[in-house]
Amino acid sequence: MEKMKVIVVDDEPRILKRMKRMVEEQGEAWEIIGAFSDGKDAIENIEEKSLTFDLLLTDVQMPELTGLQLINRLKDKMSFESIIISGFDDFVYLQSAIKEGVSNYLLKPVHREQLKEVLREIQKKIEIKRAEENEKQQLQRKAKELDYTKQVYLLSQLQVEDYSIEHKKKWRQLLGKGSFQLLYFSIDQNIKQTLSDEYPAWLKQANEDILSSLKIVLEEWSSSTNRRNWLWRDDLFSIWVLIEHPEQEPFHTDTEALLELWKENVRRVSKNTVTIAVGTEFTRIEEFLDNRKKLENIMQNRMIYGCNKVFWLEQLSETSEESKNHSAEIIKSIQQLLFSLENEEKKEVIASLDEYFKKLKLIRSASILEEAVQLLGMRIVNRWVELEGFGEERVLFREVISLTKNTSNFYQLKDKIKFWVLSVMERIQAAKRSNKNPIQKAKDYIQAHLGESITIKLIAQQVYMSPTYFSAYFKEQTGETILDYITKTRLKKATELLETTDLKIYDIAVQLGYQDTKYFSRLFRQWYGYTPSQYRDAHLQR
Image (cartoon, rainbow, N blue to C red; front, side):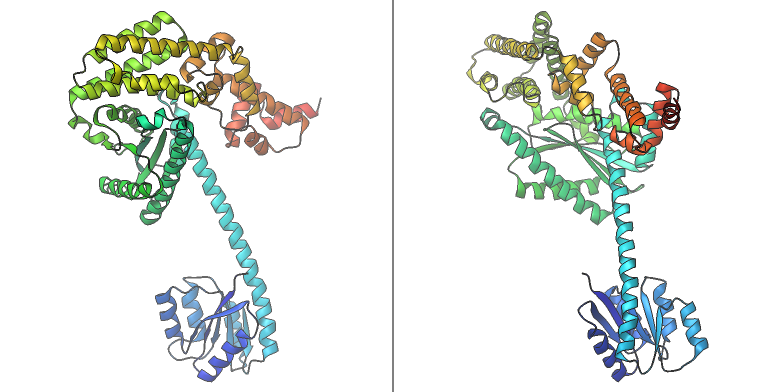
């Protein structure tokens, strides 16, 4: 148990010494942290040493400051219990002391049993106060954690196509009107790692190392700068950080300091490198989405300039136009190829490959050409590593990594790439054949995770499709959007809980993944024409 900290003040050395001894005799629960001969000396030491205490035991009549004056001066700055010791049986004075908030009083000479009894009462008050303060702090911490969870959920779910007026309101409610900056951390990969049979284990460990390092540094940086920050992951390769900056203050230096702090920390905990893309300062949700999109684009500068670098969005105009064009065009053609693969149309795949080859042929640097080919392989294989489509077999990835090293001319390179991509397509088709009913599998997943954060990306992973392709496929097969189906399923479950349980509306909302009860009630009414409470009442009256 934490000790009761006591400060004793008396201008008579003999009495001061005696009071200290008598308090210490009460057992280990009590600790004297200061003993002073007058009120002025007590205040100076308390302020200079930032002393915090539970009980002030003070004489009434002292030079410089009286006991009551001392108590009143300290009460303006801190909370504590107090006992007045008086040599005068002055009822009016003691009445005034009690009125000023003094916990108790003792008349000189103070007897041990008398002090013991008073301290026992004081101890109960202190313990109750501590328990109330602990409960208050826990509630505040839980409220803060809940707010942070809501904020991170909003940030991680925001996409350009999903942006709405409701998101804009939530942005203002959860994040306020501060000035922010977005940072994108992406784990670098090299040939040695990706060729290894231990690649999945390496990727998981690298992600954990980078993530834990970032959390430690952000906590240290936030404490020293008093700034808010938010961290979330897109996948095993990508980590996003949003940091808050005070208005009308230069933020570039602060961000550089944060990155230097992180680089120093990550060198100690991980052998991996990370490339970072840093956005510009913004205040509005629209600018957040714009920064996110641009940072994803400039991260591809790794293909041109290499890894383990920091790319600043504000300095993007200083980069070579030729390099930017190459990077953007290559990425665009790879994305189209990925979509064609998942669509399983061989003609589309070959057409996308032809476009990709046209972009490759324009490259005049052997190293950039090699990186462009390796990027194709990494983007395709990483998709299926994430979805567990390749399992432990690494043969195809080894082949694509070695293509440029074992090829004598561009036309031979084209043939080898084409053969490899079509082989991947066969694996995709095999994976989908083993998953005969993707719609039912998706519905089963939704049903089993109603109370969790369900995203299109998570559902698509269960059926080995990209989020975009899966959304279109679900709508085509069922006639409704995946988001409408999730809402319908959750609200159907809500009606069951309203009919068969006594759970509060708030508990039902949380159980079904809705942290905001008002939003849940409004949504329920839109679907059923009743609020949850009205629905329950109507059911009971049947």
